[in-house]
Length: 222
Image (cartoon, rainbow, N blue to C red; front, side, top):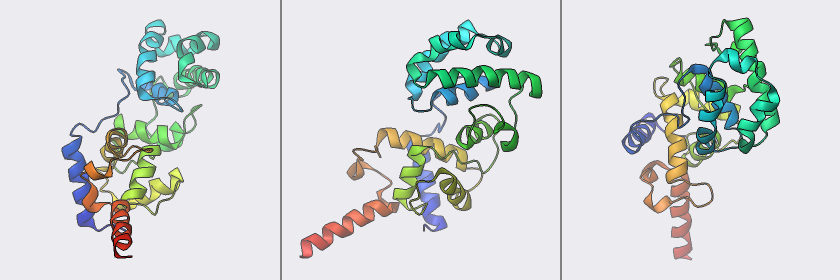
């Protein structure tokens, strides 16, 4: 595992590379982020950002979404995939937000997980981006993969285990933005199918790169 100094160095380099460290989903209201994250399941943020303006123009309030026909919501989000389940979750969650929470997105993990279509990843993102809760870890696919390569986790593919392991090593005030920067780095440099290791400035602290270098050195010696 990494030392505190190495973890600090990784965090600081990510800040230099991606100073904003923000979610790429576009939203104006808290519940819009909640639904955009649901739409982003098995879909790109770019696609979601193209779909949501028309969706929220047609249904400009939570009350409008709560009263919407699921079939009509499906038409607006069709291109995001799994549109039937997503549309149903959006309408039911809108109704629940109004009925049980006074139209306000909850600010605890327990309450967020009660909403239709909301899992730990979505809940953590809401807690981090909307409520700035310290210690939040959004374990998406980029975060799981890259933190494993870096050696910040033991390489587990389990989101809950990744979340737990990162909570243990990341400064609470840094963890949410760190996860956003992992996503940005995964899109720009540490791409799943073709990681650009030679141009990655996280190389000095990357366990995966160190193993590549070690293997190359052994090959030269044989």
